[in-house]
Structures are given as structure tokens and as C-alpha cells.
Length: 424
Image (cartoon, rainbow, N blue to C red; front, top):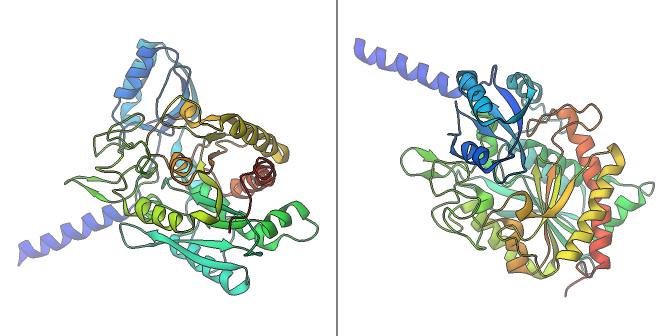
């Protein structure tokens, strides 16, 4: 009897430990510049993950700037690496937990707004409420997740027999909360724009929008409740590993352990055991293929990195319409800067993050339409305060405002170049 009671106590303690979110007290974030190949190889060799080093953007090439998070147990080791390899480094955040505390999800009180990050259930309930309020809104199901959640979005179409289609995929990475929150703000603004906001109302009236705020719902809930920096899906991989990098799992030049990805199933960049191994990417792609004749443009919303990217991501070779893509991206990035002065870099995805199996490459290769990726702001453009993917809730609306402002220009440019035309 005593041993059974002891077992219950131990089990209860373990349950409580698992239920407590991981903390990042005294974790520091540094911004490094990779100036030599020797430095790049050292960074690539570092073990990453919980209680170890973490990257907001993985090391890829010389000339790159990247952010790395250092737990206190590795601070001394890291300082030795900085000295031995002569890194140029700047301390950006002294205590990561301070940022986590600022953006922690609040208890949902039934009111949907943009001063907090909401749960999957709250976001989905809000999407259904839009269907009840607006006749032009239909809740659409883009697939399902490993843990059985639905991937929900909305179709906004005020002129069903006239409007060309734009598809938006948001937050394929679990830890990029700013992406889904900004997407819901944009949805709301498209639906509520008045005659006093003619440019917003114009793209709301004349584009057939397919918008999915949250692709990686399982990972998002895990990042909310267990480990804030979790990025992958939550599928079981082997005996001790979980998840796949969902943006390296699409059926386009996919290669296990290929460029920009990992073959080790425990690594953050793991591309999966096979192409479309993840139910999220497989079922979403099936939905997209079912509406392909309606689509003229594909957008992926990520956070963070202040960049606007277009195909290709798997090769340095230029896509057939590279110069048209560049023209659209340049005008769009200029529009982003107007509301708050936020600066975005532009180029092909290969320049920023070479990889195989990306969704926007898939859109161009399979659907024959441009696939652009936004990497939202990683700092406040006025104060310069940096936060990476840990954007405080007060950043949601200004980020969404500048992105929506840029979408006006993107739609205009894409229409001028013949991408957004109604297809019967």
C-alpha cells in the first residue's frame, strides 16, 4: 500500500512538472555576424534545443547576421567560443524570460481582440462568428493536424463570379505568434473597412481571399503551454523525438537532409521521413489543389526577420519570372515602410534561407503562381527594441497595419503583371 501511495505522489509531481511551462530566466540573446567559414561551421555544430543553444534563424552562410539564445549553463562556454573564433557579437536581450512574460497568453474572457495572444479554440470560435456576421464569409477547412485539430480559415468573396484569388498561409512555425495574430487583425480589417478607407475596401471587394491564420495548431498550443520556442509539428518521430519542420516537408525538390534541412529526426530543421509525411502539409496541399483554378497568388506569413522573399528557395538559379517578382517585392517592401518606417529586405528565398520542400516554391512549381513569404518585423522600428519571435502583444496591430498597407500595393502590382485575373 505504501509503495502505491508513493507511486501516486511521484506521478502527481511529474504531472505538475510537465504542466509547468519551461522558463528562460537569465537566458541571453546575442546577435552575431558570421564573417568566416570557420565561424559558420562552429555555429552549425552547436547542439540546439531545450536547455541548449537556440537560434531564431539558423546559421546558413558567411556574411549573415543571426540571433542565438544562450542558457546560463552555457554562458561561459559561449564566451570562450566568441573569444576563440573572434566573433563580432552584440548582447541584445539580457533576460529572455522578461520578453516571454510580456507576451504570455492571457485567460480568454470571450472577447476577441488584439491585445493578447489567443488559444486555437478561441481563434476558431472567432472565425465561425465571422461566418454568422458577414454573408461574404465562409469558414473553410484546409485539413487536420496530428493531434486531431482542424485547420480552419475563412474565404472572403464579395463577387464570386469576378474576383481572382489570393491564398494566405500563416504560422506554419509554432513559435511565430505574431503571424497568426496579425492575420486575424487583417481579416477583421478587410471585413470592416469603410468608404473612408477606399484602398482597403477595394482589395476586400475585389479579391477572393482564402486565409488560414494558423497552420501549425498543435505546435502552437505546445509553444503556449510547454516550451515557448517550439517550432515544429508534434508528430511522433522514433521513440524520443517529435515533430517535423513543416516548411521543409512540401513536395517540391524535397530531399531528406537536403539543403537547409536535417536528416536527424530530433533536429529542428528535420524535413520528415518522406515528402508530405505531415498530415498538416499533406491535407492543406490537397485543399489548395482543390481550389487551384481560383488562385493567382500565394502568400506565407512568418515571423520574424524583416524580409520579403520569393522563389526559388532550393536553388540559386533565378525563377522564370524573377524580375517581375522582384518588381512586386520592391514596391511591396516600400509600402511596408510607410506607416512606421519598418525596413524589409527583398530577394529570392535562397538568398535568405536556402532550403528544399518550402510551400512557396511548391506554389510556383505545382500551381504555377507566385509564392511570396513575409518575415514580419523582429523589432520595434521606433524604439529599436528587439524581440525576434517574442513580439509583445502591443506589436500585433502596428505590424498588421503595415502588412495590410503593403498588400494593397502587392495586389496592384500583381494585377498589373497579369497574375490576378479571374479564372473561370
